[in-house]
Image (cartoon, rainbow, N blue to C red; front, side):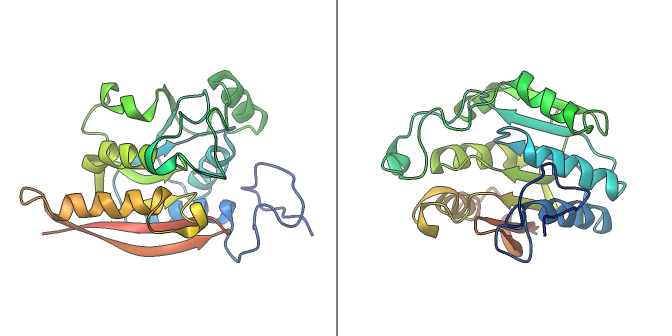
Length: 229
C-alpha cells in the first residue's frame, strides 16, 4: 500500500519513501526533529543540496509535528552538481548539472505542499566551493544538518563550513552515504572520515566523535555529533 504518512511530500508507490527499509527518507526527518526536541539541542536546520525540495518538505512538516521552533537554511547552487573532479571524476551515478532545480521552482514546490509558512526559510544560492563567502551570524547554530551533495569534494566543503556551528548532539544526515558502492574511500563516506581526522589531528580543536543514529533507505545514514572536552 502507498505510504500515507502526513510528512510524505509526494504520492509515490509502495517503494517510496521507504525505499526498501524500515526507516525511510520521510521517517528520518521525524526522528531528527524528535531527537533535537527531546535532547534540547540548540540551533536550526541546515540543508546542503536542496534538489526539488522533497527533503525540505518532510523536514518542515517534521519540525511542525514535533513543535520544534527552528529556522531553515537551505543551500544549493540551484544549477545542479558541479563539474566532477578528483575522487568524483569517474562516478557512474552522478554527472555535472544533475539535480538542477531553480530556487523559484523549489519555492513553488514548498507552496504546493503548503509548508512555505511553517517556519522561516532562508535560501542561499551558492556553489559549495564558495560557502566561505556566505555571511551568516556566527551565533546561529545547527541542530540538524542534512547533507545531500553526493560528491566527496562538495561534502568536505560543506563539513568544513558547518563544523564550527555544530553543537554536542547535532544530528548529521548524509543522504548519499551509500553512493559509490558504499566505498569508504569515496563520496560522503570519505569526506566524513577525512573531516573527523582533520578535527582530531588539530591540537587547537576539541576532539570530536560520531555516534551512528539511524540508517535510512538504501542510501542514507544519520549520526549524532559530540565534542569531547
